[in-house]
Image (cartoon, rainbow, N blue to C red; front, side, top):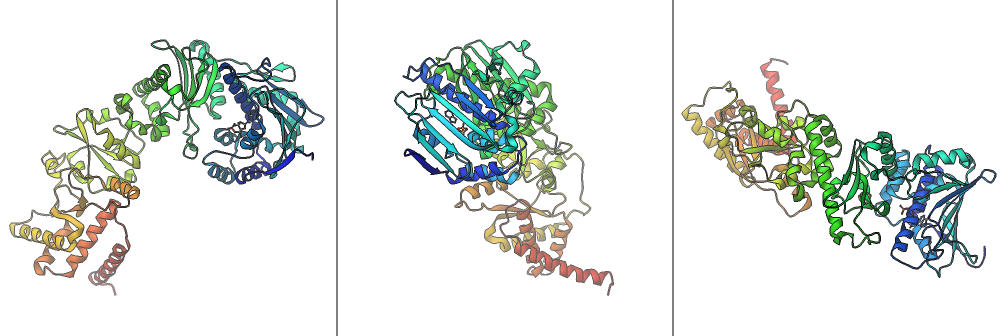
Length: 634
Ligand code: ADP
């Protein structure tokens, strides 16, 4: 160790990451090369960018390229670029720490899943460290493009510490990485092997890559070529390069836009939604080129967040090469391109929905969860309305999807609203007592099973002239006026005048039992098979919406519900009999409490089920006594 050598410890999260990478035997270790080449390419892009801005730099005439050398005797290889390089402080900041949010979560996932890290590493962008999957020692020699900076050497075995030495010797601008291979990875230091890895993973890098003397990659901007001359395989290969996906894309959208602004766009919709998204929300965007020169990787302003599952490239004729990333958003040409990219996607999806509805449903199942968050984007509002999908009471199974146009095309005569109901899943919703009147009237109800769905319909407000209306808050009197599809009469006779009077007195009794907990207790006109249910006041929020709001705002109390009782239900009829005999019979209290809490439980707003279960078990015990008695079992 010389005087100007300093030892440092890796930051804790880097140590954990390295520990996993060093000690696991991954089959996809070769991707370390993709990561180092991609870093080299970024460094070259950054340099070109500085150069376009006219910044002073060292070795001004060095060509922008990546050179890979290998030594099969020494079992090592080097990856060198003539890019931006790093100063001593930059080395410490860039390799030694990970300054990304969500790193801990990522490292935990990587450790837990035992899955192949090839895709995860690339997507999360901790690429440099992947070299320790194959290396027992790594030496980085780097010289910043700034004239007066000294060259530095960084050295580590990946086990916890690294060393930094300031070099006195003069190095050319850029970064050279020496990789000393582990014994079990030594076969990588061979020409055919390296060549095939580069071709497989780095073919579309936009700077020349030399292996020994030969240029390996075919630098071509396929998005600039006419659509007819690009083969399906080329699109696929480019998509895989861009996305680190191992699958082919679901859709390819390639377009040359001429007016009002000239640009080329090549977009891909992945086959599978990226489930890393929520851990890694920063990792999206389109690559922005100006006349084939990469200006920015993963630009986020080109796409709204709800389209973030789309990958691709935009290449403009009309932006200046030296445009800074900070001023992009204020550039009118750029904002026009961005809105044109969105409308290109919307047109594509609209066509797909029209001409290939099975394909569109696939798309919705994979990406709908994110796409539907576009409900707030008014610039594409009308198209968006036609593109959202729901399952409904008329669908034959939980897979079927309908559009709002499908819904309105089969609305019943006199129907003025689009009905929806929220709940955990289709099976639960089908059993929901609120559905009974809709079934009876043959009215279709949208099943909203994703918590965000209700926000979506509440914010969209209406489709054409039809308001969205929660089935729990619908005015059942208005619905009762509509014709039943089949006259489903209850087996019971109509209540006589006298019993009807007692029924209403029973309701008052129930109201006094439930007192503060309900807004009112009323005769139901919506129920057929159930004895009772709770409903919201007109315009009230549905139960699930209230639950979401209560989770985010603890202050918000439960709004009072109306308790509806069905006079044509056997249980209620018996209750009337009991009531007639003794209005203060405890049985009335027990049944009222039980029905009310069951109704709350069913809509998901019962806070504590313990008393309900106790009461239920007690009634079961009693009915077992009666059962034994009636059946004469002893
Ligand atoms: P990412 O590339 O996603 O930022 P890495 O762990 O691969 O993550 O690299 C960390 C950082 O180290 C890079 O952001 C860059 O600033 C720096 N770096 C890596 N390789 C080079 C290189 N060849 N030239 C200049 N800087 C580099």
